[in-house]
Length: 321
Image 1 (cartoon, rainbow, N blue to C red):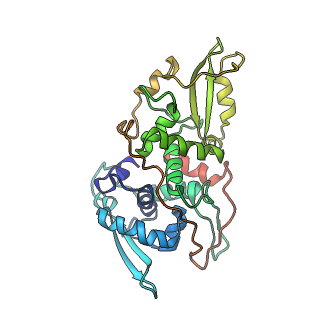
Image 2: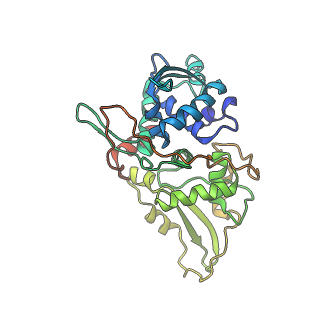
Image 3: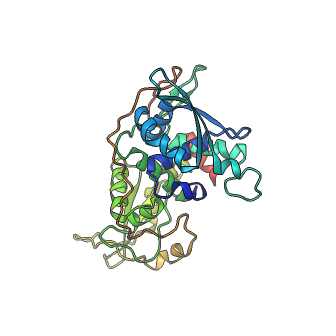
């Protein structure tokens, strides 16, 4: 995922554009390297309207040099049918050991993971149902950022649902969890904090405070309950095992630097670069007040949200591991 999002053409790109590249990559045919999709359907994956995708996302994709886009125009000249090729994915096909040289089964696993996280949901002609993902109902302003953030957190999480947090000194006002998400997204800590709060409000992530035997705040953990559920683990059990037996203080202390228990975490390889920790430009939330467009394939209708213990998420995560 880092190799795909860190390509030169996506530097400083909006999260809607970055997520569009990920979605197109996951739907790429391994034989031809081409993905065919309607503009409205791509918008449903991003949580944005078809008109916004056509006017704001596709032009940036073309200029970036990351995706080639051929279109079939509608009766009013708008882009309707899209034939796209993710060029870094295509260029890496014959390069041995390249992280983007994905085989057919790996592309299928990536697609299953995206379906579990953000699929809009369909009912197919043969009666099969692809349920909506965890954020399938999240639309409008900030929807692409929230979807991309949850995807990156799922990829960072262990089987227990615990996310490996960044090391080093962080802004104690925001906390280590917000700093970790900010580094994954490439935004400021304040923007990462807002995204984290929105995911917490949907109970998709949890920040768990741990306490020392003296009752002082030691550190916090960032958990993704859906990952733990997919592996048959419960985050609550894991948290109780790590807590010291002591009453919770009335006035908890703010997040501090990692304690001795997280020393090894700081040394583990990070998926993203620790740069932009103190950058001033916030790019986590795109300036758009878009709503979900109902334009989609005639054979598809939205369905209910995905359960946290769904075999779709369980299967995709086990394959990713």
